[in-house]
Amino acid sequence: MSGYDLHIQETDSNVDGAISPLLDAPAGVVNNLPTPPHIANDPAIQISPTFSLNSTLDSVSPDTIIASLDHVFFAVHHHRLLASSVNNFGGCLNPHTKPTHIAPFTFIVQESSDVLNVVLHTTYHLSCDNYSPSFECLYASVQALKKYGFLPLQRLISRGTPLFTTILNRAIQEPIKTYALAAANELEDLAVSASAYTLPVKLHLIPQELVDKIGTRYLQRLYKLHGNRLDNLRELLGKKLFPHVAKPYCSVEKRQVVSRALQLAATQVMYDATPATTRVGIESGLLGVVSSVSCPDCEESVNAHVKDVATQWMIMDRTI
Image 1: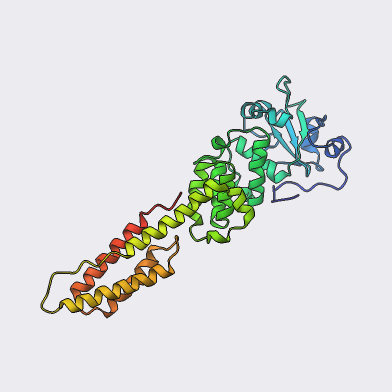
Image 2 (image 1 turned 135 degrees about the vertical axis):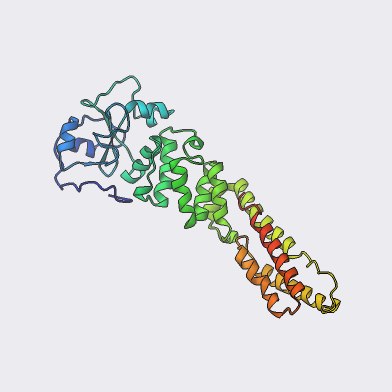
């Protein structure tokens, strides 16, 4: 079975004759399956653990059975799919029929079990995180949701929904792919959240394939985010040190030496900076000046200056 482990029982090589016509049929063709008890008791048949014949996902028993291209069966509810789909599940469902648990409506789809699993979890508002779907699976699942009429996508993949969380969790390892998925499907909430994970990425190295998926508008917004953060950091680091009042033990010349040392350190921090520069990076780069300062008032001024710069940097926008 492709993708990831559905935790289902392995099948025998000889599939039962009563079910083999469905497995051999082209996608979309409706067939007659054995009655649910036959399926449930046949060790040669793979059934989704979440969408089993005995699932309690609805107040009524499942009355529709979908077979994936790799021959995994999902028992679902006809009325649930019709209520959520604008095209009768890609034309696979007949809104005028009334299937039952004993005489279910059955058909096979072109998607693999891992993709169909994500699609059905999403339509039932369930998290599929425990299956650890790959990014490729998630991308294919979003396309399948559109194909089967679960629109608008923004309703299913908005902040706080299970699929939104699952996809965003992939942004740590795949920030640009995640952003591209969101941009290509006009998933604004997801694009905004994913953009924060793109800060370490060198945008000029994004493959053309992903550039095309992102599109002009979302790419411009990403470049603006990265550029604005560097401009803001440059402005913060360019701020002059506010000197302490004159003291007998610290001349103007000494205070100027401290200011120049801080400016030099700020220049180095800016040279090494990226849009993802951290507070720790700023503080460690600037506070090295303190080691050569003998005046306690100058040291206090430097510490206050660095704290102010770092604090302001932390509140700068991190998303598009």
